[in-house]
Amino acid sequence: MTGAGITLMDGDQVGPLCVSGQGAAALEDLQFTLGEGPCHDAYRSGRPVRVVGFDVDAPTRWLPFAELAVRTGIRAVYAYPLTCDNAKLGVLTLYNNRAEDLTGERHELCLGLADVLAATIAAMDTPTSDAPLADGIENAFAFRAEVHQASGMVAARLDSPAADALVRIRAHAFARGQPVSSVAADIVARRLRLDDDRLPHLDQEQAEQ
Image 1 (cartoon, one colour):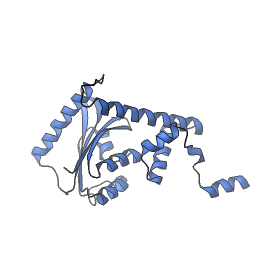
Image 2 (image 1 turned 60 degrees about the vertical axis):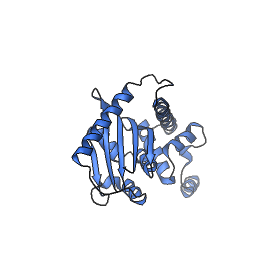
Image 3 (image 1 turned 90 degrees about the vertical axis):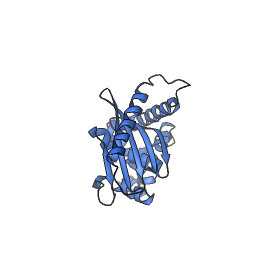
Image 4 (image 1 turned 120 degrees about the vertical axis):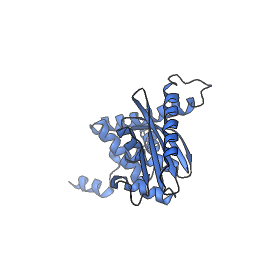
């Protein structure tokens, strides 16, 4: 594998737990920004998602993700849902710089790894200093909390549903090439107001009316 990412999920909300490998961090963040990608598909379906050759096998809705993957040298992706006692916890995503599928043995190993990760995460309800993943889990929850807070602030300001507010935050982040976490932090800190994020000529037209 060229890289890997573990993401905690709740519905369409995402919190990065850890990421490793060249290009993986950018791809993990882009999936949250777009709300689409192998991670989301694996979580929603509850089944592994394996794509070999982004120019052939990637769904059309993944186009920005596939383009970034190719630019960063990633040719294949394998996403495994993390479930424990029928509860969906997140997704393990593996990245490969070669356009090849997993052998049956490697697929079984990935399933086993996903089970171990899910059980480990589920057992860490109360993070402690001697738990190796505790800091990562705490950071993931903090990430999600900040995005939720930012979505709530935008929703209240624009009098719109929180889901629509999150879409607007994602669109703003994607348009400017920023991580969603960075945009959310700016909103919470009141450095950014999305209702001010309009094209100048539109502001001028409204002023003239």
